[in-house]
Image (tube, rainbow, N blue to C red; front, side, top):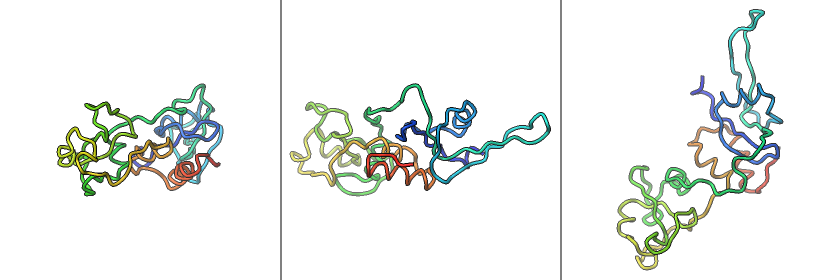
Length: 188
């Protein structure tokens, strides 16, 4: 069953995205009456055991749930920088030669090299194929005469959640997060 149910998008009670949760975690949130509201049209039926009266048990869960938590896990923090999320952000393209590559052929390039005071942050990293990264070495793009095809940026949390979802999202989850990323506000 779990292979057929995508991750559930968990929001805070105000409608801001928090994280992806498994359907099992979502069922627990419903059972503990922590779900305050739902959004989107995608619903999943979770079938359980048998009730005392012999009838089968089941529960409907939504693809997007808003939960009242004691504390928000994300807030306004910077999304974690991982190679997987970086490569997704940059479309698996080398930002120097413009060619698409498999993840195993890519690396994280620091626009201002760490050896020269650059930091390992979203706004200073680009996806580069190993060949271009070696060619650029510990120089700035200008010094290496390798201007990038795009500028690095830090994704907001909605875009970040789309990046790490690996395509396993429902249409309503994607539309919700894309709308939030465009406007900076949640709508439900």
